[in-house]
Length: 294
Image (tube, rainbow, N blue to C red; front, side):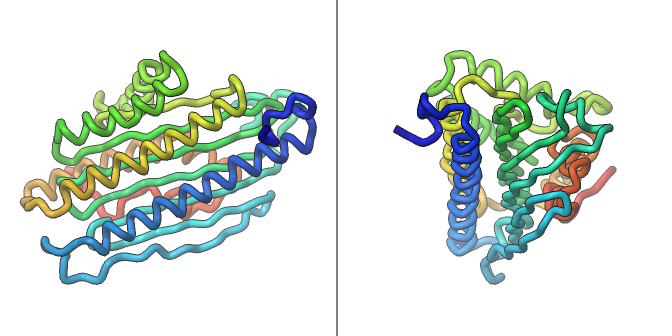
């Protein structure tokens, strides 16, 4: 029996601490798996316009939050990944009064604990889609999981979109018969730019405030991360050696501008991080290295 599902101590402080540790440790483990896989892709490049460049390596930097906790950024700029960040953090403390009521479980107390992983990749080739993945565990007077992953092609590719969605659908189907239908629609609704009346990309899944059974919710969140680890590297490897044109690069840079608009105007994670005193560079890691507006 695992420490987080013992019926005799389900609501004890020790059990709550154990659940937090399990979630935090998984996010760190997934970070290491993703960084290793992405570096192996960098090393595998044997052709194309960037083949003469040295393979990228992740640079890690720890940071501390004044109110409690901290995290570690892992950033790589390479010949396949123009910029990719795989960040983890665990922060705790008290919300500012202006932000307090917006988070479930903070009506009577501003105290919170949050841990998670955030991944954003912007690729050198416009034929390889940008991607985002985030999963998190938040504890206030309530306890829940949230996150998801979405794909943003610069040039449309039906096979990439289909394979990505299938991976997310398998993760959802293993835990809830209606999860994929609910969470894929939620993703479409969430990653949308109302001022342009267009989607950010081709979707994926998005979920929040998942607080059914802790163990089951954790395992689902873990499977979302594993589905991403399975699906995205295959998409990268399939496309990164294909020839592309300057017109496609131009299209990529303009599409990145849309990415910037969404993340700065609408993204919940960006707002949460900035309003809880997070590391600004880590929070804005999601922004592309180069973008353009027509």
